[in-house]
Image (cartoon, rainbow, N blue to C red; front, side, top):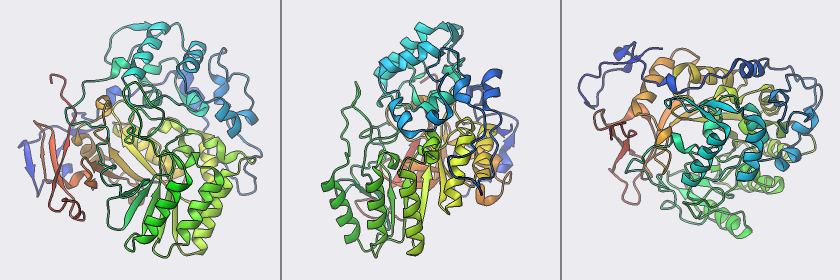
Length: 487
């Protein structure tokens, strides 16, 4: 992999030299942090081929390896049948969301001795590893919740370096000193909330947060101020599902003539009851001012089996919303969140096929994470797998400046290098935009649109011309690279 070496002047102001002129052989995308799964695990990842489903019902003639049964023999999933593993009810009964259940699971799948996290020499015992998890949970802003599908995709022979494990289960040994500018609500969503459950920042678009629960909790969650259960560090100001909140949000949306676009998130729309999901869709479709809306869910990435469970009403409700929106002439999409190609299996491919055959538009939003996907090879593989499933790689976000996630953050230069090297390697309509969601409520800006970038101090500046309310007109927003090791 190639990257950028000679930066020239340390402070750049527009216009800047195209990134492609600065390419050299030095690797700044930190590929050394990305785990290399064991041969056994790589074997279990094989065979993820798309299927021709045109003549098949969602639950018939499933093909592909039963990878959940390829975990160690003592795994609780070892004897789980395909029908059970694809059942949403079975998944919710077997979700891991307490330390006791997590340690019970790790005791069954982690070898007696495993490698430490990359950069830390030596091996560790299972007990040391579990102690590291315990310390990570105490130091994290997010509680732990992991679906069986995710647990089955982790390389338990080397979990500390597995890019899937790192996203959902914190390790104290990998955490770094907080940058002084990190904040719990770094995007100032609460300040941009005119009524409970609504974040209204852009002139024509608003974020609707009806629920605070997700199928999994990401360690790097940008909404850690309100999502999930309370932790040692954070008492959550959650946005719980309630009729009063829903009606207040609907009333506000309908009262804003300039609002045209709504993102329904949370939490995660996957945990909305199916009748509430459909009600939200119906209400938005029937509002004269709303032209576009989307449901944001990580479900397709972390529990795709739900889309193959014919007994579960949620996928049908989602597809009905898409059909009704299409008939009403309104744009509807599902926005999902894959970060690494190993998250994708034949179950994912078939779940995505069910949605695309129902003419549901799917877009993906990734987060650039150190030790997970911060190298060109990994991101390229992810983009290509998404494209093969007809999922548009929409955004790659610079990791937000959220409290306790310093170990995940990468310099802005990593995003610039990666975008430069990926551009032209795949069709333009499958090339994601690399963006920074600006701290302080500046909204999304292309990473390459900075006003200045001082690589010595790690400070980049941006403007958000479209934002003019609440003192934001002409405001300069700053993004800070992670602290250097000597800091």
